[in-house]
Length: 312
Image (cartoon, rainbow, N blue to C red; front, side, top):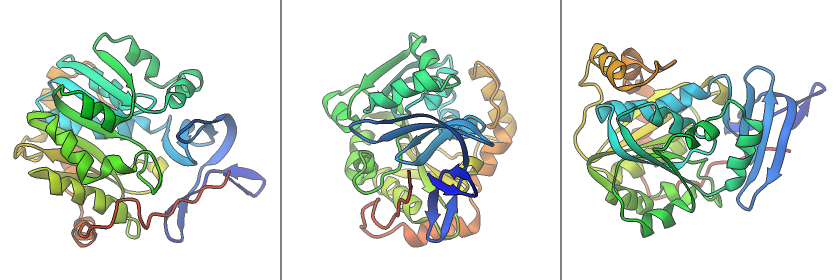
């Protein structure tokens, strides 16, 4: 955090010379795990949220937007049904909550390496999904390194959702975004299976990491599609990416068909996602398409060149 005008603010550099901040009303919790610094902060405009190593993960006012956008496009392509889903990371469980909203999902396995994140969420994020997810018999939590879990377990999945923190140099998430990890993930997908991941900021000066993540997905999966959203609490346009084992076209179903499918396969209505929103997200603007094409090549590791600046 930084001090400015008598107040405390979060500070996250999005691109060189560009940052996004939230005024902090209260530091609710601050702990160091073996993996990272875990904080729960009460922000003035967006409410209580989780921050890891000073970087925003989610805040109450628009967590639904991020979680719905990560899960529902993939589930739409799967017809609203999946026998088994793996969720990598996902801390407080928003993505898992969205998955369990489908009666057609048979089992959701969440693999989380940091128990401190889970414990802090249970104690200090009353609106988080950690407790309610645990009450669903279809849910199973594994405390483990995701790559170790995938290497020792041969169980197949219809969908793998990557909801890890940012893969900066030296972070525990860094190796989960590379080609080797993606090949392992692909090997655990059934035919017709889908991999869904966030990729990061795609502002005019901040698309390097997102382009590299998307390029890695394209290098491993036979088909891939990117889509965009704008979680305002992040202060930037955000990219997600799907890795597809079969040539599913996200724009093939009409908005009306998507809405009808959601009504028939989802237990409760969404706040953000519907058929029109689905099409809007996959119609990626020209400048972002150009940035992905320009910066997605090369062999530079995902985390290099991405600056992290957070004062506490």
